Image (cartoon, rainbow over all chains, first blue to last red; front, side):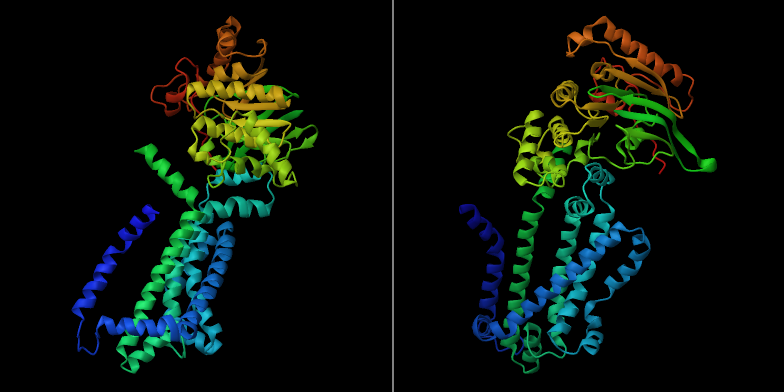
Length: 259
Length: 290
């Protein structure tokens, strides 16, 4: 417990200091763009702890979750297939181009194709999340030590076991690294999808608040986004620590051995 | 039991053709330990891949009790040279040993029982819940051996199995292998460049040499069993046999221009871990041209 407490203090002392600094320097601020923090926090409580929690925050998070899930699954499946096939070398440059296109740029096209609905937003998020997972999975699967494949064959494992018990675990460190990139892209895509032809969500709140010169509301929404992003990153780290404990453990031992 | 007849392997074609070995004949009887010994580059690992069904020979065949080996068979287990690459680092010891049993034994309880028995047999009880990379090199190779014997194979193939462990561990693992052979009644075929090891472990030694490699001689090893690291190795016949095999291997390599020196070579990485007294052909570094 003590250790946990210390870790939390180590993690949060600087942000807390910054917030305090912000609080005191913005006190009594008359600026249109930078209202006092006290006002922002009051608005934050009203909006995100109550009024907009169900109507704006949850829909955003739901779209984010579905989009990321669909994108990551498509990316992992296609990446595995590609990594195992011989055409990967020829297709990879094309995929790099696809990834290089900012997903925001595709929003107008996707709206034209799918209309303005949650489906459209999930499609945007999914499209953005596919590429990092796909490319990393392809590389991960392609670069598996051939010895491991030989081991799989010589143990007479069936194809499914080779895939799920040898190839995918062996590629998992790279797949998870791709997933981490996808999480941040999915968050950008979530907000982006709500800035266009939208009626709810955190992105929409930011846009409409700015248009109505309601700066405290905008700042409160930004604060909420920061917290969401931080929480997602934390979750991802926890997941990584659990799922890849073997990977980090082995790396640490190898480092110690070569030192 | 295992019968290898007129086995040939080559890579490339036409002017690039590299024949690795040609018309190899060799056999292993039930319960026998046979060592294939030869210098580096002779194609021992390639031969082992063919016997294990991982590579297709260009001619000839490998048969196990009359069954053609054209893919890995369930009755045959292979222990790879490099334990750090052949064990799954994401599985604990018990998971690694259970892996080959997944599609052989349906009941989970029986699977675990078989895995525990194998772990016990290699002397690793109490380490089931460790990851392989938390163990020493010798222990990791024991895990690999446990994984290989867990499914009770009729034939155990070992490809330079003890090349990357220290001398004492190596001796222990040699004895372990012989003990497991007695315990499980399986046949064992070991590929090695270490002549001492081949004489110590084998009932017969098959000497390979040349490029393309050929069987020069099959030497019976009539040393008394059970073998013992001290008494067996101090027998005059042990010294005679190892000298005889070394002569066989040297005879050819002196004529060869390409394969280089034979015998203890200072600075060779693998020799640093090999016994100082051991007569060793240059470690295997097959030039794979695939």
